[in-house]
Length: 407
Image 1 (cartoon, helix red, strand yellow):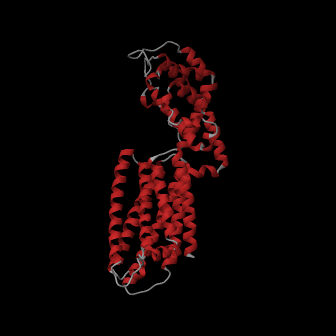
Image 2 (image 1 turned 90 degrees about the horizontal axis):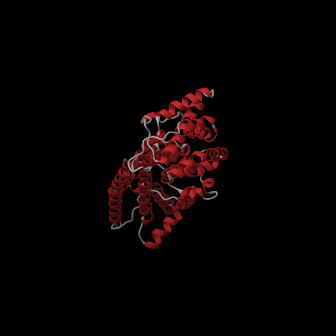
Image 3 (image 1 turned 90 degrees about the vertical axis):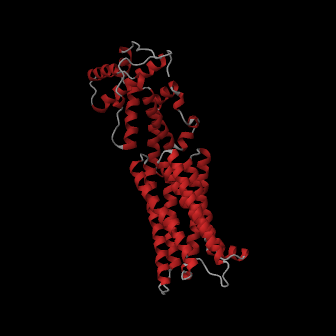
């Protein structure tokens, strides 16, 4: 049974590694690179853990436990990679890199101690296995306790904590779901550690309970599949829900008129021009929509010196005269603000009466609410007569900036 479970994990691991490596080549990032390392280590480590292959490696090299030690080193690498990815998601780049380096140094030191203990067991006249059955040997006990403490307890507790904390903050639904699934997988990894530790204590007390390897195989399989699913879910999750993909595609196209004008005036806001290629946005619509939303918001912030409170008053009066109310009225006013600010930016004029910096509307509903709100603003920008009338009614130019050119 354990052979089948480990083989299943190995196949899944190599597929996940290939999938994430392809994504990393398309859109490199620190977080994605870390998870590629973790998946590669997982695939290699779980492959080496398949019992017939591990036995063949040990026999071919004449070094008992070599495959197990390398597999344990891969497990430490998996944990370090997952931790690094989460740090880069949750923290600013410099802080994430500094904390990740500390974890990597601690992991490297831990594995060096484990290798030294493994080397010491090679001096024994009678070979031992680095398993709980040989736990009465102090060196084997030390090896297993160090591996459990660092490879599972320290990392998995921190991974669980980071996943749950970041899941409450992130706006992307599939990322949020993936983080929670990853956290559950880390809990099963902790159960794996508890199982090993319990058997270790039992063997030290003179008992010889059976079933440790079978229980460990089940727990590590559940933990691995959950963590693999969770960490890759932001990439493949949107593909599962076809209706969601079509909704995202409609929202992406709906935001086009406002986004086009903002990027035309402020081309530096566009961070990934590959999305302009045919079908590129369709292939990864979740990412494309996220970028479009972020760039529209960045454009609103960049136009802040050109947003005039006088325009707001004019737009509100025109919206009232047109019988608009609620979100439609607010969207028309914001669309008029943006249209007039773009005109002022192109002509190189600043606002006489700048709009307050904290006046940017923040809709309820998280990321989905943001997409829906910007859709309303874009509709008003492209089609609402109030916007055209506000632009015409506020045609007088504001005070020019120093140098007379837009910044």
